[in-house]
View 1 (cartoon, rainbow, N blue to C red):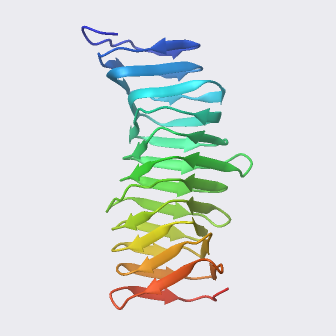
View 2 (view 1 turned 180 degrees about the vertical axis):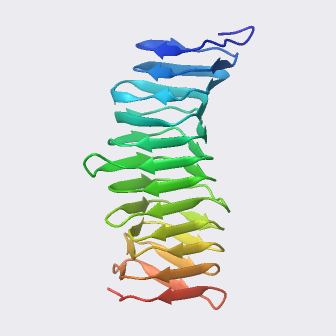
Length: 239
């Protein structure tokens, strides 16, 4: 698609490629069964995107998603384009991994039929993530001052890369696990039920407010640093 915008009511992408320099704006549902989006233009999926089942989906152009949808995708979704969830509630209910940068400006709910794992390579959150069950894994997190993560009992937020936490909240009755990361707190509020530091993680509380209601677990290769600038309240036990 080049030389002018393209604005269909609905779009079905199935074993095909949408490419070009022009923007594509879909007012209704985008059904992405299989195939690639590429090119320098942006896809505006204003009626939401339906990701269902295992398929070869590649995101090589910027995609902006609006709408309330439930994804049941599986497998890996590679690509270099940025996927932005702009408005509505997006529920993810099956195991998959997304390589493309993911921006959340609205609400994302991780709620499995059977508890499992969803992974993202890069996340920038200025909205809300609600992790109802299973594991939500982030391999790279961009700093934000307003985003929130809510972790329900039995669920886990797993962060596997360095994170400068400048604001926002990580809270709930679940577990925050940091795996091999430098987690630096400069602001905001962190109060999960359980905190696990593993695989050489450094948890540096130099600002903000940290309160752990349950157990704080630190393996032999990890460390916890606390400065007077931070409010650190471990109400539970250290393991």
